[in-house]
Amino acid sequence: LEAQPDIEVVGEAADGAAVVPLVRQVRPDVVAMDVRMPLLDGIEATRALLRTVADPPKILVVTTFENDEYVYEALRAGADGFLLKRARPAEIVHAVRLIAEGESLLFPASVRQLAAEYGDGGGNRAARAELARARLTEREGEVLRLMARGLSNAEIAARLVVGTETVKSHVSAVLAKLGARDRTQAVITAYESGFVAPG
Image (cartoon, rainbow, N blue to C red; front, top):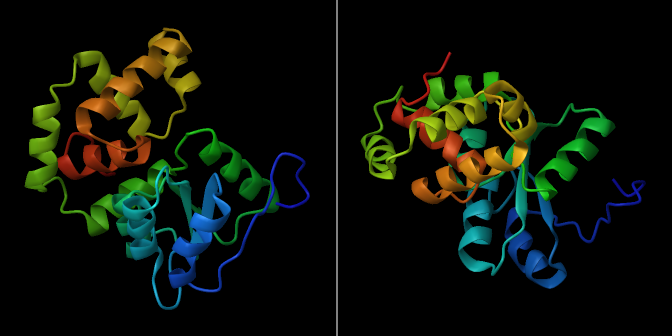
């Protein structure tokens, strides 16, 4: 990462408990952290960052296995995406840039598998109620389904034959109506509610 002209590594934490104080001190745009850390795991560190840090950074969790229950819980807690430890350097750089730009980094097949394994197969009553209260328009529902399939704003725009700015407006409306912090949380709600089926 340090070799990239547009990325500056501003700190490293030895364990999960050191993440929050370090973030408060150095104010990074993106935090990349192992989902399984000593003292405080990536799930609790994510929750702590989002709960206690004003204007929290984007959070990228790193894991060894793509079907890791910890990844699913970290995404539910508010992480913006996940990356496998075996990712190539170019993929890591791309992931950090995407997360910094406000995009989510989700691998649709992995999210579907995670939702199927660790979610309750669409039986999450709270998620269903949240989605029902949101009263998404038909177009917003289409956009949410395409987000859940891992499409970027540009890809959604091409699929729906609309402009990228129109898609951004729909995404913003979906996030606001769902009370979701970001695309990742909206996608998790879509899977948990059964709005989008795993598989």
